Image (cartoon, rainbow, N blue to C red; front, side, top):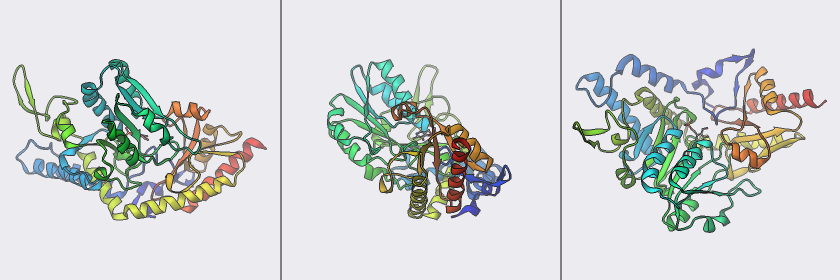
Length: 403
Ligand SMILES: Cc1ncc(COP(=O)(O)O)c(C=O)c1O
């Protein structure tokens, strides 16, 4: 579906049609995103917010227009609640280095889950060590979901932050974040949701969810690399100190002291990543044009087909929910007797791109008892014939290694 919108899909890899199944790492970019960025550089390039001249005003409108698109896309109440960052990683670090440093004290607890990406684990580890706080983890159950029955015990009066992924980048599990947010708020804890794998796959309504912070990764939702989003509730962002400082984030500067700009610019120091933010706006246009319901239905069909076909191959172990509504099309697996790295090389010879390794989730892989998994992940442009090629390639690799 919509394949003709993605120029790269015309490429041949090793003489074969490109079958791109590494979408959880980064998605391919539709033509309108590429064109929006070239159009900016060819016709509107100037720095934003500072110029009276026409180009600067056009660039400012385009940049701020993208903020409006993000606001609408996740249904934030105010446009000032949308902060552009370099990615999901920076958005999480922004919260850790501002809100975290102000609010986390010795003896406080930060609750994460056993399925976090390193980006939503390592920054909290650094903060906890520095402040003398404690990290706790919501465990996984045998169906690859979070053990919700442990929540009541795990969230205590000392819990200041619950930070968890909306969708696991290894297991594909969709977490019941609304329930977890309610439980955390009941005990007075803040909640950050890492939506890096959710944006562009399922609809996100931050007001309905009630999250305090929600993070998006532009390049995983058909946008360019180098851009992400931090959503934060306005009253929280208003009370946060600046993250980085310098130009653009100030209202007034004296030799000894400075005062801060209004939101969102207080948290966007320096010249912004203007072209990529505009590219992200175009990616949202693309997703809206396809429609998130259509995206979800398409990916669900593809995912169920893959799970069914993988299930027919003996020796395949899938790490993640078996099927259905609890998961999206991020499928980590191992084929008995075939090292994941070799499997990926064999598939690459056939033009098929998958990912292998720990997928930035080493503790989770340790828990799974493996060092590495193969991961195929899907997007709007994947077709049944992509899956047929994948399955055929896996069978070939097994035959090569196991006969
Ligand atoms: C769940 C999750 N969180 C965070 C990230 C980091 O995103 P970014 O590349 O935008 O920093 C990723 C990237 O793989 C991810 O899958």
